[in-house]
Length: 285
Image 1 (cartoon, helix red, strand yellow):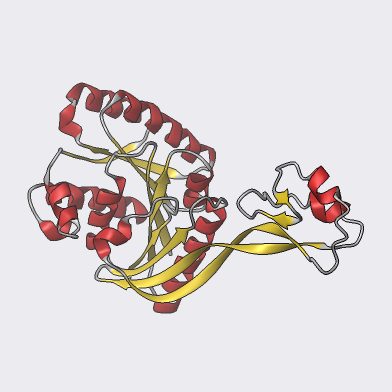
Image 2 (cartoon, helix red, strand yellow):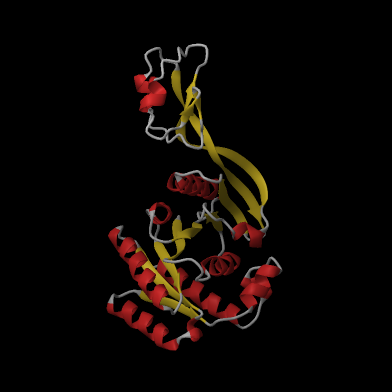
């Protein structure tokens, strides 16, 4: 089973639009939307949910009123001021368990908190594993790992040989969880100063984890000077350019019609197909 993660060092490069196009081209695959903080692949693919699992994250404290003697130790020692009138505010509690340790009558217990849900859905592009992280919740890296595990399970059950992952922007914990153990990281960038800067950072992360990287330059014609600069950088560092995609309003029009760019058609579709050909060839080397 091969795994490809589509990444972007920064938001707004068109990562998910490119991912949607690849989802329409690649065969025998499972899709995984691992941008759990702001998932949007489902907006294009309109998934039909088939399976739903609760995601339990950081624990929160609960005070048993029947046991509590109101001694005040939990209120005194709580570093987050999450306890008021011997009731725990779950939005303030960080799960440090100090209150449980200092309680002399064992009236405090730590309980798992439901922080989101993981879904397995069917789409016209194939099975999709995705998630919803509730507002204000953390541990998105843990949730991404769960989404990827679900995707692999589906691939094994159905005899599919590719997991195509829509990763998170940036270089933090969600990105690390999205690329761990994958065969290729396809980084979608744009020819801007910030695009090149953040491309360098995400490629360094991939190199640290020994993940093979490829680069796709989206909106390449908005600044040919920067496009050439990105190309030169990749050549100096032996990073393959999977392709360049010109700016096109068709991406927006396709999104409005809830279609991938391949389904919408137009001249830019050919560029997406060429990107996938390069990625697919690298997978089989």
